[in-house]
Amino acid sequence: MPLDHYHDEHQKREYQNDERLKARKGLFSLGAVDIKGKIYERITSDTEQILDVGCGNGDLLIYLKKKGFRGRLIGVDFNPGMLKPGIEESEREGLNIEFYEGSAEDLKFPSNTFDMVIAKHTDVLDMEDYI
Ligand SMILES: C[S@@+](CC[C@H](N)C(=O)[O-])C[C@H]1O[C@@H](n2cnc3c(N)ncnc32)[C@H](O)[C@@H]1O
Image (cartoon, rainbow, N blue to C red; front, top):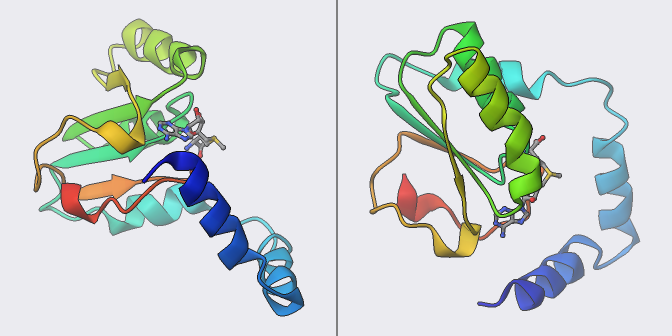
């Protein structure tokens, strides 16, 4: 499904009436939620490979690494300018995080590759197939 179509459908669903808009606004007035901490808490001893789609500057992956996650961390984003700081920090600090330029709609990973797939603040399609 082309992204534009998906985006339009998504927006129609999200803003179908005033109730939905109020609910959505409520989400943003909950106060600070430690999303990265919550994600870290979901890691178990069985978590070996984590994919972050639309990873931006890689701050979540860097956070997970610095918190002590020792498995494989992969970030994908279709904007090379967004990836650059994460790549540089990973190299500079020897974090060994893999960053790839690519679209969420055309991921090259086989099914069942990852134990956790994250798309934080990123409008992307269903990622379940990659888990
Ligand atoms: C709002 S930023 C969030 C970045 C990061 N996940 C975070 O939480 O800080 C959205 C990111 O998703 C990326 N993005 C959006 N759609 C994408 C797609 N279809 N494929 C790959 N990256 C995408 C953008 O380039 C951007 O870096």
